[in-house]
Length: 192
Image (cartoon, rainbow, N blue to C red):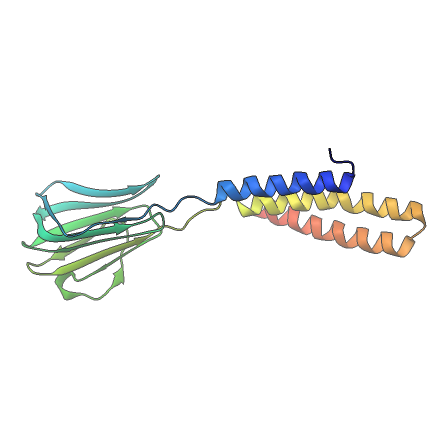
């Protein structure tokens, strides 16, 4: 099949990167709705979840009653909008990256903290937006640490190979640079 060592190595690396690419590219699910009706009485909750991330609207008092609701979300963002038919108080709990609310008592768009309570008056058009920071398949610092470990091993091996050939300057220079950079990457991984 493959007779040359370099071709074999390049083929293995190509397959590795294609597999890594296949795992990191997730399908993007988009949900978009037309206007719908929602009715959630006091002491109930409305939750939106993506994998292990969630946004929960707990109705503390009043009723979340609206015939003009829309919901849009994908794997990274979401938006729930409604026009309040009654006055109500919401407590918003979440573990996503960021939640912004606007329209409650005609307030502008602002960030809120998990556990904050907002009051919504009758007729308010409320927009609740959230963002989820997507995480890569593998932690980047782990990859940097493994590259550093490989460089700390490969640098001296390359230098020894060049020294055997009699290329002292090339062997020492490249070996030193690769080893120092590898050491720095490895220490950076351990430090974080």
